[in-house]
Length: 314
Image 1 (cartoon, helix red, strand yellow):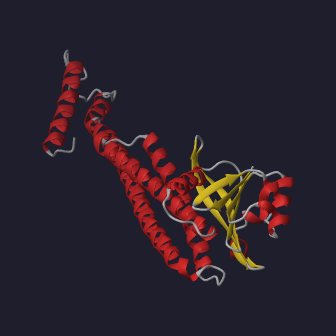
Image 2 (image 1 turned 180 degrees about the vertical axis):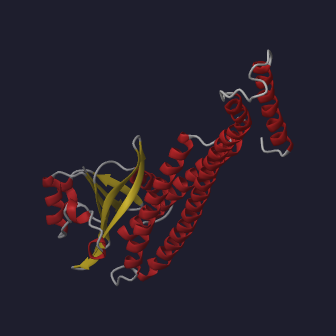
Image 3 (image 1 turned 180 degrees about the horizontal axis):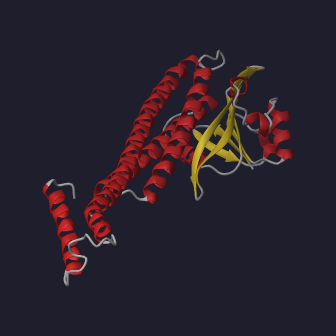
């Protein structure tokens, strides 16, 4: 599907028929969402541009993430979306040529939908596709900020659960690990956008009067990176706290077994002595010798028990 946004007077209108590209004036943004081969070739021919292949879009090399060619800015960036399976990264290819913004992506995206909604209600006059790009980036950064804020609330809830339960549970550790993974994914996409925007800021094809607004976006990105670092440090602290609770539980269990082992040592010794088949034993022929040995073992256990209680070892 292809969406073409163009300016007519002060209004921004949309066209979905790629065959109308040659007849439309003041085109601001052409958004290609999972286009057919015919639609892609038509846009490339009419606009004199060339989109990268899906394999080239996902390349991680710096030369593939951002480059300039034939008066065209080419940038590839990873965006984040939340689905039923969790956090998912999807690539977006961005091109700017002669003031027109081209975006190439697969699947639907809330960021693009929010950008279009803001564009419709905004009082700002969009002069070119550069303004559309800045609006798209600002929307994406706002979305990342919301995701970070949600993660921060989830981290606070886990911290409260640990303080309330005071016990190490497996599901809490799994939540911490999942949040660590989500934080790393989000941080990865933010760093990726920072790298791409730094390249755009140095471009001679990007309007000078728009670079100050782009610098503000980069400052917002830096703030998000600091926030994500803080969240990751909190998760590491919670993980260390969780492991500390596990160690306390294990130490408590070992302590209990150790105490009971020591408590049963004197009775075991007494039982071993009285179990010797020697006639020299004073109680071996006594009528109450058996009961005397049991009483002696019970007294030794009680003595050891009270000794440990007095020392506050149990």
